[in-house]
Amino acid sequence: MKIGSVLPEKHWRSGKKRGEKQMNDTEKRLRTYRALTTNPEWIEILQDALALQEREEAEYAVREYSWLGFEWFEVHANPQTLKKMVTLKLLNITFSSHSATHYKIADPPLLREAIQAMSEPAPLV
Image (cartoon, rainbow, N blue to C red; front, side, top):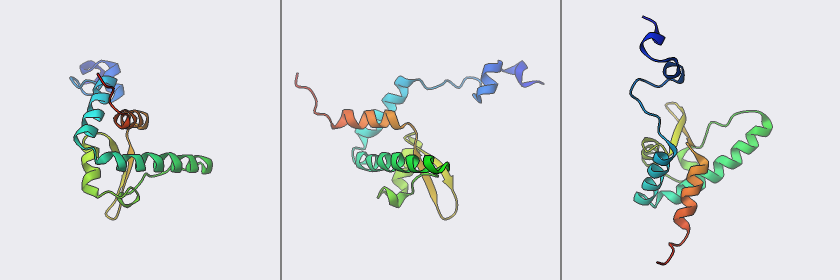
């Protein structure tokens, strides 16, 4: 049986399974805002991660190498917290071995927007 005979070409080429819907921008935005409002202590960790990721990716772009990502001690957070962020799709694991796990922010512009929105004072009604 050919793959194309079961799934339309656009699905099997994109790696999506039948019935799996793509998350749209609104769902991503809601998930990100919900994670930060539920866990406001993560904001400082994620700000450190954003700054570190921007700095390192710019530095590695000049060298033409790719950066693996940050480790837990570089953002002063315990690994369990970072793993929760991975399950909520705020972070991605980019490398994992017995001695190290490296992370990158999944959507830096969206995370930056959410952090900025949460740090602004709420308008008076």
